[in-house]
Length: 343
Ligand SMILES: *Cc1c(COP(=O)(O)O)cnc(C)c1O
Image (cartoon, rainbow, N blue to C red):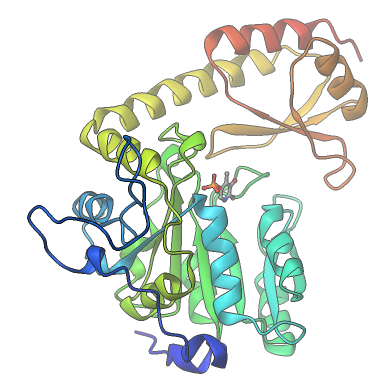
């Protein structure tokens, strides 16, 4: 059990903020005449969305076995990353810590907020060096550690996550954007034990709804209250809320997507073995592969000529390309083009 006084970590101006409370969203009515929000009385999407997204939270709460008061929703988990930085990091003063390589958006939002970005270089297997972590945490006292597991773009999961939580005097954000593709247990299970943890999940990857832009944060009630205080009141629009609600009623959808992606992932892995330009396929717990090529730049270009878009990670990760699992048809096209690229 690690007890944190979260308030000592929060920016003073944020602590003093009053959340925007939508009167209609926080009271029960039967058939109200709504003349309070200057909306148009006609049309299908004429009303503002539920600012507290109660229905989705109730369903997610049931699915995850957690109280709805410990869930915040964002316009993608991207928005939540931005908000978390704004809540805890004083511009020009505080720093965040992130793995390197990892998801670029942590550094991006920190830079927008004028916070220093400290990078924890991973070893050759893309694992965190614990001594480096302890040193940089102690010396530089970053406010937030973004722990991405499975990590994007490397694909591997972080081992011994509790070590990093126990040894960090700030907020640990566990980004689980790809957790459904791994066998990992969620950090949500750790929330009762550690009050400095925020778990991020998203509907953009395994759920298959990147276009709806909905992500979720799971954390203590105190932290969730802070997120709700700083978020734009109507950050998740009505169309997306409806869409996600329907999706949550169709629980098989997630399993279906994950099952198909894992099947394709295994198929691709087998096919990669006979591709000449591939030097190494790194082990993955996600829906993508990080692959070391004989000449990443050439391979990337040749794929692009055939209108196959991949993610060039070189030179940051020498000679590597990140390729995500597609449909069978897309994967076959990928393999055929790769087969034609000789060393
Ligand atoms: C894709 C991804 C996200 C999801 O972002 P959304 O804004 O929810 O679409 C978050 N974190 C990581 C590491 C990702 O790769």
